[in-house]
Length: 368
Image (cartoon, rainbow, N blue to C red; front, side):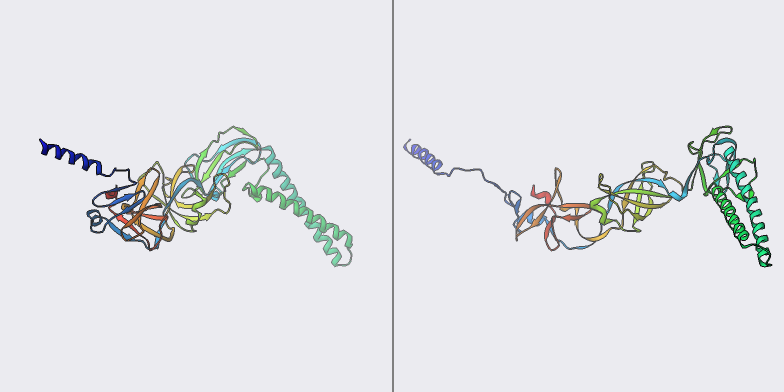
């Protein structure tokens, strides 16, 4: 009984002598020690044997960049045709989907205003002929010493005035693709196509009366080539170069990729969206890219100096991305980085680490 009492007393004394345990900032395991963002990994520990390290180096990398865009017809390849004069449509020559050439007739219109223009042209042409004959006669008289210089000057002035009137009227008619030499008084005006292409819109109705303010009746477009107008953010302008290759996708054909090339980079930044317009010219033989369609634009040729990492080096926590950067022989610090995809299981580091530094490239899963 005495021995039992002595053993119990010893146990009480030993427990009283044990130091009080306080909460530590670090967590120790047989393999690693974690203190905040810092990790100590002994090289001979089981974890140290499982991780891989990579010393970073700068290299030429392809930095992909994606943004949205909109398909547009090339301006010189599309034409909206309205009636040039007030009048009534008397005949239609085309239908939707029809292919036309430049100068092909589209519709004809009976227009009093057009008739007056033709009449004025023919009268001016006749007056020019009379003035030219009078000028030659007065010049001949002066050359033979029987003419008066004043009358010759007047004849020359009248000829120049009549000539100018004819030229003005010819120019007026040519604006509407009307050949002045083939016009006749009272003949309906034939409206022709200014470009080659396809009739993509046709609202012609024979007998319809239209004014000069009426909406276009026909739209001709050549959509074998189109533009894609991409919106490039201010921070990404340096990634875009003239003639860069671009890959384009649309929702309607998700498995198909269209190829284009940067043809123009805008000069003025939109102050509200902080973006720049970039024009991409695309072949569109099958006409899958229709004007107005929204697209995804992927720029492919942005070569710059950068650092490539395997995606296994990354740690994702909420909205932040980290790597473990080596700061000592066995010390690693969790460091935030900004990365973008490089494909093939790799990423491009935009900032956070530099060439020459060492990071854990594989095995980060053992540090949690």
